[in-house]
Length: 438
Image 1 (cartoon, rainbow, N blue to C red):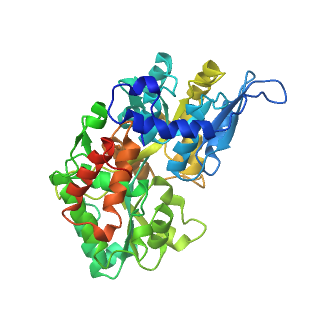
Image 2: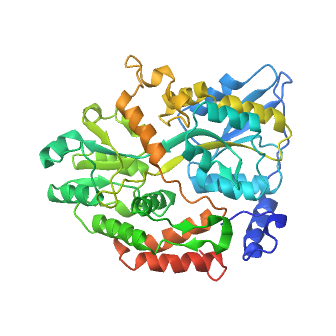
Protein backbone atom coordinates (compact mmCIF):
# COMPACT_ATOMS: atom_id res chain seq x y z
CA UNK A 1 0.00 0.00 0.00
CA UNK A 2 1.16 3.56 -0.55
CA UNK A 3 2.94 5.45 2.21
CA UNK A 4 1.79 8.95 2.99
CA UNK A 5 2.61 11.75 5.38
CA UNK A 6 -0.52 13.57 6.50
CA UNK A 7 0.36 16.81 4.71
CA UNK A 8 0.99 15.13 1.37
CA UNK A 9 -2.19 13.06 1.40
CA UNK A 10 -4.62 15.83 2.26
CA UNK A 11 -7.49 16.01 -0.18
CA UNK A 12 -6.60 12.81 -2.03
CA UNK A 13 -9.07 9.90 -2.18
CA UNK A 14 -7.98 6.98 -0.05
CA UNK A 15 -5.51 9.03 2.02
CA UNK A 16 -7.19 8.18 5.33
CA UNK A 17 -7.21 4.50 4.38
CA UNK A 18 -3.48 4.57 3.62
CA UNK A 19 -2.28 6.67 6.55
CA UNK A 20 -3.82 4.56 9.32
CA UNK A 21 -1.76 1.37 8.83
CA UNK A 22 1.44 3.40 8.59
CA UNK A 23 0.63 5.14 11.85
CA UNK A 24 0.24 1.70 13.43
CA UNK A 25 3.58 0.62 12.00
CA UNK A 26 5.20 3.78 13.32
CA UNK A 27 3.92 3.12 16.84
CA UNK A 28 5.26 -0.42 16.59
CA UNK A 29 8.72 0.62 15.44
CA UNK A 30 11.70 0.75 17.74
CA UNK A 31 13.58 4.00 18.02
CA UNK A 32 17.34 3.57 17.86
CA UNK A 33 19.67 6.44 18.70
CA UNK A 34 22.35 7.42 16.19
CA UNK A 35 25.75 6.31 17.36
CA UNK A 36 29.41 6.85 16.75
CA UNK A 37 32.16 4.33 16.29
CA UNK A 38 34.53 3.25 19.06
CA UNK A 39 37.11 5.72 17.77
CA UNK A 40 34.65 8.62 18.13
CA UNK A 41 34.10 9.06 14.39
CA UNK A 42 30.48 9.41 13.25
CA UNK A 43 29.03 6.11 12.04
CA UNK A 44 26.79 6.26 8.98
CA UNK A 45 24.44 3.29 8.97
CA UNK A 46 23.51 1.91 5.54
CA UNK A 47 20.57 -0.49 5.41
CA UNK A 48 21.30 -2.87 2.55
CA UNK A 49 19.53 -5.65 0.70
CA UNK A 50 21.12 -9.10 1.14
CA UNK A 51 23.99 -9.85 -1.25
CA UNK A 52 27.28 -11.71 -1.37
CA UNK A 53 29.35 -8.90 0.13
CA UNK A 54 29.44 -6.19 -2.53
CA UNK A 55 27.76 -3.46 -0.51
CA UNK A 56 29.90 -4.15 2.56
CA UNK A 57 33.04 -3.91 0.42
CA UNK A 58 31.93 -0.60 -1.04
CA UNK A 59 31.02 0.72 2.42
CA UNK A 60 34.54 -0.03 3.63
CA UNK A 61 36.05 1.61 0.54
CA UNK A 62 34.02 4.78 1.03
CA UNK A 63 34.63 5.20 4.75
CA UNK A 64 36.87 8.20 5.43
CA UNK A 65 38.80 9.90 8.22
CA UNK A 66 35.61 11.84 8.92
CA UNK A 67 33.10 8.96 9.15
CA UNK A 68 32.74 5.20 8.98
CA UNK A 69 30.02 3.53 6.90
CA UNK A 70 28.57 0.39 8.45
CA UNK A 71 25.88 -1.89 7.03
CA UNK A 72 22.72 -3.47 8.40
CA UNK A 73 21.09 -6.20 6.30
CA UNK A 74 17.39 -5.96 5.47
CA UNK A 75 15.14 -9.02 4.93
CA UNK A 76 15.48 -11.04 1.73
CA UNK A 77 11.98 -10.23 0.46
CA UNK A 78 11.64 -6.81 -1.20
CA UNK A 79 8.21 -6.25 0.32
CA UNK A 80 9.55 -6.92 3.81
CA UNK A 81 12.46 -4.56 3.13
CA UNK A 82 9.91 -1.86 2.30
CA UNK A 83 7.88 -2.49 5.46
CA UNK A 84 10.90 -2.41 7.76
CA UNK A 85 12.20 0.84 6.29
CA UNK A 86 8.73 2.40 6.14
CA UNK A 87 7.90 1.85 9.79
CA UNK A 88 11.22 3.33 10.88
CA UNK A 89 11.02 6.31 8.53
CA UNK A 90 7.39 7.00 9.42
CA UNK A 91 8.55 7.31 13.01
CA UNK A 92 11.32 9.74 11.89
CA UNK A 93 13.97 7.37 13.25
CA UNK A 94 17.33 9.18 12.95
CA UNK A 95 19.40 5.99 13.08
CA UNK A 96 18.90 5.28 9.37
CA UNK A 97 21.35 7.31 7.31
CA UNK A 98 21.50 5.47 3.98
CA UNK A 99 19.28 2.76 2.52
CA UNK A 100 19.17 0.51 -0.51
CA UNK A 101 15.75 0.93 -2.14
CA UNK A 102 14.07 -1.25 -4.76
CA UNK A 103 12.91 0.94 -7.70
CA UNK A 104 9.14 0.31 -7.24
CA UNK A 105 9.24 1.96 -3.82
CA UNK A 106 11.24 5.07 -4.70
CA UNK A 107 8.19 7.19 -5.55
CA UNK A 108 6.36 5.97 -2.47
CA UNK A 109 9.17 6.96 -0.10
CA UNK A 110 9.81 10.26 -1.86
CA UNK A 111 6.15 11.28 -1.89
CA UNK A 112 5.96 10.65 1.84
CA UNK A 113 8.89 13.03 2.42
CA UNK A 114 11.22 10.29 3.65
CA UNK A 115 14.13 11.03 1.28
CA UNK A 116 16.63 13.86 1.08
CA UNK A 117 16.84 15.29 -2.43
CA UNK A 118 19.99 14.46 -4.37
CA UNK A 119 22.15 17.62 -4.70
CA UNK A 120 22.65 19.11 -8.16
CA UNK A 121 26.40 18.46 -8.10
CA UNK A 122 25.76 14.79 -7.38
CA UNK A 123 23.22 14.63 -10.21
CA UNK A 124 25.83 16.13 -12.54
CA UNK A 125 28.34 13.47 -11.43
CA UNK A 126 25.83 10.72 -12.21
CA UNK A 127 25.17 12.16 -15.65
CA UNK A 128 28.90 12.55 -16.36
CA UNK A 129 29.58 8.89 -15.56
CA UNK A 130 26.96 7.79 -18.06
CA UNK A 131 24.15 6.68 -15.75
CA UNK A 132 21.53 4.94 -17.84
CA UNK A 133 18.38 6.90 -18.59
CA UNK A 134 16.20 4.11 -17.24
CA UNK A 135 18.14 4.21 -13.98
CA UNK A 136 17.73 7.98 -13.68
CA UNK A 137 14.02 7.76 -14.47
CA UNK A 138 13.50 5.04 -11.86
CA UNK A 139 15.37 7.18 -9.31
CA UNK A 140 13.23 10.27 -9.89
CA UNK A 141 9.89 11.51 -8.63
CA UNK A 142 8.11 14.66 -9.79
CA UNK A 143 11.13 15.66 -11.91
CA UNK A 144 13.52 15.47 -8.97
CA UNK A 145 16.29 12.91 -8.47
CA UNK A 146 15.56 11.40 -5.06
CA UNK A 147 17.91 8.39 -4.90
CA UNK A 148 21.40 7.65 -6.25
CA UNK A 149 21.31 4.88 -8.91
CA UNK A 150 23.72 2.18 -7.71
CA UNK A 151 23.18 -0.93 -9.79
CA UNK A 152 20.83 -1.56 -12.69
CA UNK A 153 19.74 -5.11 -13.24
CA UNK A 154 17.99 -6.48 -16.27
CA UNK A 155 16.87 -9.85 -17.52
CA UNK A 156 18.05 -11.60 -20.67
CA UNK A 157 17.02 -14.90 -22.22
CA UNK A 158 19.42 -17.59 -21.08
CA UNK A 159 19.40 -20.84 -23.01
CA UNK A 160 21.08 -24.22 -22.97
CA UNK A 161 23.19 -24.46 -26.11
CA UNK A 162 22.71 -28.22 -26.26
CA UNK A 163 18.93 -27.76 -26.22
CA UNK A 164 18.70 -25.16 -28.99
CA UNK A 165 20.96 -27.34 -31.14
CA UNK A 166 18.62 -30.28 -30.57
CA UNK A 167 15.52 -28.12 -31.23
CA UNK A 168 17.19 -26.52 -34.29
CA UNK A 169 16.51 -22.92 -33.25
CA UNK A 170 18.52 -20.01 -34.70
CA UNK A 171 19.37 -17.93 -31.62
CA UNK A 172 21.19 -15.31 -33.71
CA UNK A 173 17.76 -13.88 -34.56
CA UNK A 174 15.15 -12.43 -32.17
CA UNK A 175 12.85 -15.05 -30.71
CA UNK A 176 9.31 -14.78 -29.38
CA UNK A 177 7.65 -16.25 -26.33
CA UNK A 178 5.49 -18.37 -28.63
CA UNK A 179 8.60 -19.83 -30.28
CA UNK A 180 10.40 -20.79 -27.11
CA UNK A 181 7.27 -22.24 -25.49
CA UNK A 182 6.58 -24.34 -28.60
CA UNK A 183 10.21 -25.51 -28.76
CA UNK A 184 10.27 -26.59 -25.11
CA UNK A 185 6.82 -28.15 -25.37
CA UNK A 186 7.80 -30.18 -28.44
CA UNK A 187 11.06 -31.43 -26.94
CA UNK A 188 10.05 -32.42 -23.39
CA UNK A 189 11.83 -29.48 -21.80
CA UNK A 190 10.92 -26.83 -19.21
CA UNK A 191 11.16 -23.02 -19.20
CA UNK A 192 12.22 -21.13 -16.07
CA UNK A 193 10.22 -18.01 -15.17
CA UNK A 194 9.18 -16.24 -11.96
CA UNK A 195 5.47 -16.88 -11.29
CA UNK A 196 5.04 -17.20 -7.54
CA UNK A 197 2.57 -14.81 -5.90
CA UNK A 198 5.16 -12.08 -5.37
CA UNK A 199 6.75 -9.05 -7.01
CA UNK A 200 8.81 -11.16 -9.42
CA UNK A 201 5.63 -12.38 -11.12
CA UNK A 202 4.51 -8.79 -11.71
CA UNK A 203 7.96 -8.05 -13.16
CA UNK A 204 7.28 -10.75 -15.77
CA UNK A 205 3.73 -9.53 -16.48
CA UNK A 206 4.92 -5.93 -16.82
CA UNK A 207 7.63 -6.95 -19.31
CA UNK A 208 5.07 -8.89 -21.38
CA UNK A 209 2.64 -5.96 -21.42
CA UNK A 210 5.35 -3.43 -22.28
CA UNK A 211 6.75 -5.74 -24.96
CA UNK A 212 3.32 -5.78 -26.59
CA UNK A 213 3.32 -1.98 -26.74
CA UNK A 214 1.22 -1.23 -23.68
CA UNK A 215 1.44 -0.22 -20.03
CA UNK A 216 -0.16 -1.35 -16.80
CA UNK A 217 -0.89 2.28 -15.89
CA UNK A 218 -0.74 5.65 -17.60
CA UNK A 219 -0.76 9.16 -16.11
CA UNK A 220 0.73 7.80 -12.88
CA UNK A 221 1.13 11.34 -11.57
CA UNK A 222 -2.63 11.40 -11.05
CA UNK A 223 -2.22 9.01 -8.13
CA UNK A 224 -5.38 7.02 -7.44
CA UNK A 225 -6.92 8.58 -10.54
CA UNK A 226 -4.24 7.17 -12.85
CA UNK A 227 -5.54 5.54 -16.04
CA UNK A 228 -5.48 1.77 -15.70
CA UNK A 229 -4.61 0.26 -19.09
CA UNK A 230 -3.72 -3.36 -18.30
CA UNK A 231 -6.97 -4.48 -19.99
CA UNK A 232 -5.90 -3.04 -23.37
CA UNK A 233 -4.72 -5.24 -26.25
CA UNK A 234 -1.22 -5.46 -24.80
CA UNK A 235 -2.58 -6.83 -21.53
CA UNK A 236 -4.51 -9.47 -23.44
CA UNK A 237 -1.34 -10.42 -25.35
CA UNK A 238 0.48 -10.81 -22.03
CA UNK A 239 -2.30 -13.00 -20.63
CA UNK A 240 -2.16 -15.23 -23.71
CA UNK A 241 1.56 -15.85 -23.14
CA UNK A 242 1.12 -16.66 -19.44
CA UNK A 243 -1.81 -18.95 -20.21
CA UNK A 244 0.07 -20.68 -23.04
CA UNK A 245 3.11 -21.46 -20.90
CA UNK A 246 1.09 -22.43 -17.81
CA UNK A 247 -1.04 -24.93 -19.73
CA UNK A 248 1.80 -26.41 -21.80
CA UNK A 249 4.22 -29.24 -21.10
CA UNK A 250 6.95 -26.56 -20.96
CA UNK A 251 5.67 -25.39 -17.57
CA UNK A 252 7.69 -26.76 -14.65
CA UNK A 253 5.73 -28.54 -11.92
CA UNK A 254 6.53 -25.74 -9.46
CA UNK A 255 5.45 -22.90 -11.78
CA UNK A 256 2.97 -21.37 -9.32
CA UNK A 257 5.65 -21.08 -6.62
CA UNK A 258 8.63 -20.40 -8.89
CA UNK A 259 11.04 -17.59 -8.08
CA UNK A 260 14.52 -16.62 -9.26
CA UNK A 261 16.13 -19.50 -7.38
CA UNK A 262 13.74 -22.28 -8.35
CA UNK A 263 13.71 -21.11 -11.97
CA UNK A 264 17.49 -21.33 -11.94
CA UNK A 265 17.26 -24.88 -10.63
CA UNK A 266 14.84 -25.81 -13.43
CA UNK A 267 17.27 -24.37 -15.97
CA UNK A 268 20.16 -26.32 -14.51
CA UNK A 269 18.28 -29.62 -14.57
CA UNK A 270 18.22 -32.22 -17.34
CA UNK A 271 14.95 -30.62 -18.54
CA UNK A 272 16.42 -27.13 -18.78
CA UNK A 273 15.92 -25.21 -22.01
CA UNK A 274 15.26 -21.48 -21.54
CA UNK A 275 15.32 -19.13 -18.57
CA UNK A 276 14.49 -15.47 -18.05
CA UNK A 277 16.48 -14.23 -15.08
CA UNK A 278 18.87 -11.55 -13.89
CA UNK A 279 22.52 -10.94 -14.69
CA UNK A 280 24.00 -13.01 -11.85
CA UNK A 281 22.99 -16.24 -13.62
CA UNK A 282 26.19 -16.19 -15.72
CA UNK A 283 28.28 -17.34 -12.74
CA UNK A 284 25.48 -19.14 -10.89
CA UNK A 285 26.61 -22.65 -11.89
CA UNK A 286 30.39 -22.20 -11.91
CA UNK A 287 31.07 -24.38 -8.88
CA UNK A 288 27.83 -26.33 -8.40
CA UNK A 289 27.27 -27.44 -12.01
CA UNK A 290 30.27 -26.65 -14.24
CA UNK A 291 28.85 -28.67 -17.14
CA UNK A 292 25.76 -26.45 -17.11
CA UNK A 293 27.95 -23.34 -16.92
CA UNK A 294 29.69 -24.37 -20.15
CA UNK A 295 26.32 -24.98 -21.82
CA UNK A 296 24.84 -21.49 -21.25
CA UNK A 297 24.03 -19.16 -24.12
CA UNK A 298 22.34 -15.78 -23.97
CA UNK A 299 20.34 -13.39 -26.11
CA UNK A 300 17.84 -10.53 -25.90
CA UNK A 301 14.66 -11.03 -23.84
CA UNK A 302 11.90 -12.73 -25.89
CA UNK A 303 9.45 -10.65 -27.91
CA UNK A 304 5.83 -10.55 -26.75
CA UNK A 305 4.71 -9.86 -30.32
CA UNK A 306 6.74 -11.04 -33.29
CA UNK A 307 8.54 -8.15 -34.94
CA UNK A 308 8.14 -5.76 -31.98
CA UNK A 309 11.24 -5.19 -29.85
CA UNK A 310 11.05 -6.72 -26.40
CA UNK A 311 11.09 -4.56 -23.28
CA UNK A 312 13.19 -6.47 -20.75
CA UNK A 313 12.48 -6.09 -17.04
CA UNK A 314 14.33 -3.37 -15.17
CA UNK A 315 15.51 -3.91 -11.62
CA UNK A 316 18.29 -2.67 -9.44
CA UNK A 317 18.94 -0.64 -6.35
CA UNK A 318 19.11 3.07 -5.65
CA UNK A 319 20.71 4.49 -2.52
CA UNK A 320 18.50 6.89 -0.61
CA UNK A 321 19.50 9.27 2.15
CA UNK A 322 17.01 9.58 4.98
CA UNK A 323 15.46 13.00 5.46
CA UNK A 324 15.65 12.31 9.21
CA UNK A 325 19.33 11.37 9.41
CA UNK A 326 21.37 13.22 12.02
CA UNK A 327 24.23 13.18 9.53
CA UNK A 328 22.41 14.10 6.35
CA UNK A 329 25.19 16.12 4.68
CA UNK A 330 27.81 13.47 5.39
CA UNK A 331 25.41 10.79 4.13
CA UNK A 332 24.84 12.66 0.87
CA UNK A 333 28.62 12.93 0.44
CA UNK A 334 29.03 9.23 1.21
CA UNK A 335 26.32 8.26 -1.29
CA UNK A 336 28.28 9.96 -4.08
CA UNK A 337 31.23 7.69 -3.32
CA UNK A 338 29.03 4.60 -3.02
CA UNK A 339 27.71 5.09 -6.56
CA UNK A 340 30.98 6.11 -8.20
CA UNK A 341 31.99 4.02 -11.24
CA UNK A 342 34.67 2.19 -9.26
CA UNK A 343 32.20 1.36 -6.47
CA UNK A 344 29.64 0.12 -8.96
CA UNK A 345 32.29 -2.02 -10.64
CA UNK A 346 33.49 -3.51 -7.35
CA UNK A 347 29.92 -4.39 -6.39
CA UNK A 348 29.26 -5.94 -9.81
CA UNK A 349 32.42 -8.05 -9.69
CA UNK A 350 31.44 -9.46 -6.28
CA UNK A 351 27.66 -9.85 -6.69
CA UNK A 352 26.93 -10.03 -10.42
CA UNK A 353 24.57 -7.06 -10.08
CA UNK A 354 25.58 -4.80 -12.95
CA UNK A 355 26.48 -1.08 -12.71
CA UNK A 356 23.95 1.68 -13.27
CA UNK A 357 26.40 3.58 -15.51
CA UNK A 358 28.52 2.98 -18.58
CA UNK A 359 31.68 3.99 -16.69
CA UNK A 360 30.85 1.38 -14.05
CA UNK A 361 30.98 -1.26 -16.79
CA UNK A 362 34.51 -0.11 -17.61
CA UNK A 363 35.76 -1.47 -14.28
CA UNK A 364 38.57 -3.81 -15.50
CA UNK A 365 37.79 -7.06 -13.63
CA UNK A 366 34.34 -7.27 -15.25
CA UNK A 367 35.75 -8.01 -18.71
CA UNK A 368 39.25 -9.29 -17.90
CA UNK A 369 39.34 -12.99 -18.91
CA UNK A 370 42.05 -13.57 -16.31
CA UNK A 371 39.61 -12.60 -13.55
CA UNK A 372 37.59 -15.45 -12.04
CA UNK A 373 34.29 -13.54 -12.11
CA UNK A 374 34.67 -11.78 -15.47
CA UNK A 375 32.03 -11.64 -18.22
CA UNK A 376 32.35 -11.94 -22.01
CA UNK A 377 32.34 -8.53 -23.67
CA UNK A 378 29.31 -9.37 -25.81
CA UNK A 379 27.36 -10.34 -22.67
CA UNK A 380 28.29 -7.06 -20.96
CA UNK A 381 27.09 -5.26 -24.10
CA UNK A 382 23.84 -7.26 -24.04
CA UNK A 383 23.28 -6.23 -20.43
CA UNK A 384 23.76 -2.55 -21.32
CA UNK A 385 21.56 -2.77 -24.42
CA UNK A 386 18.88 -4.51 -22.38
CA UNK A 387 18.97 -1.85 -19.65
CA UNK A 388 18.59 0.83 -22.33
CA UNK A 389 15.56 -0.99 -23.75
CA UNK A 390 14.11 -1.99 -20.38
CA UNK A 391 10.66 -1.05 -19.13
CA UNK A 392 10.65 -0.11 -15.43
CA UNK A 393 7.50 -0.79 -13.49
CA UNK A 394 5.27 2.26 -13.29
CA UNK A 395 6.73 4.95 -11.03
CA UNK A 396 3.86 5.67 -8.65
CA UNK A 397 3.50 5.97 -4.85
CA UNK A 398 0.74 3.39 -5.12
CA UNK A 399 2.81 0.65 -6.72
CA UNK A 400 2.38 -1.71 -3.76
CA UNK A 401 -1.39 -1.54 -4.19
CA UNK A 402 -1.14 -2.03 -7.96
CA UNK A 403 1.28 -4.94 -7.67
CA UNK A 404 -0.72 -6.66 -4.95
CA UNK A 405 -3.90 -6.32 -7.00
CA UNK A 406 -2.26 -7.92 -10.05
CA UNK A 407 -0.87 -10.77 -7.96
CA UNK A 408 -4.32 -11.48 -6.52
CA UNK A 409 -6.02 -11.74 -9.92
CA UNK A 410 -3.24 -13.25 -12.09
CA UNK A 411 -2.20 -15.98 -9.66
CA UNK A 412 -1.96 -18.90 -10.08
CA UNK A 413 -0.72 -18.75 -13.67
CA UNK A 414 -2.93 -21.67 -14.74
CA UNK A 415 -6.00 -19.55 -13.88
CA UNK A 416 -5.07 -16.81 -16.38
CA UNK A 417 -7.43 -16.39 -19.34
CA UNK A 418 -8.34 -13.64 -21.79
CA UNK A 419 -10.64 -12.22 -19.09
CA UNK A 420 -7.86 -11.82 -16.52
CA UNK A 421 -6.61 -8.35 -17.65
CA UNK A 422 -10.14 -6.89 -17.44
CA UNK A 423 -10.76 -8.38 -14.01
CA UNK A 424 -7.43 -7.07 -12.74
CA UNK A 425 -8.15 -3.59 -14.12
CA UNK A 426 -11.41 -3.45 -12.17
CA UNK A 427 -9.76 -4.76 -9.01
CA UNK A 428 -6.84 -2.30 -9.21
CA UNK A 429 -9.28 0.60 -9.50
CA UNK A 430 -11.39 -0.67 -6.59
CA UNK A 431 -8.31 -1.01 -4.38
CA UNK A 432 -6.94 2.43 -5.31
CA UNK A 433 -10.29 4.11 -4.73
CA UNK A 434 -10.87 2.36 -1.41
CA UNK A 435 -13.73 0.18 -2.60
CA UNK A 436 -11.90 -3.10 -2.02
CA UNK A 437 -9.03 -4.48 0.05
CA UNK A 438 -6.07 -6.63 -0.88
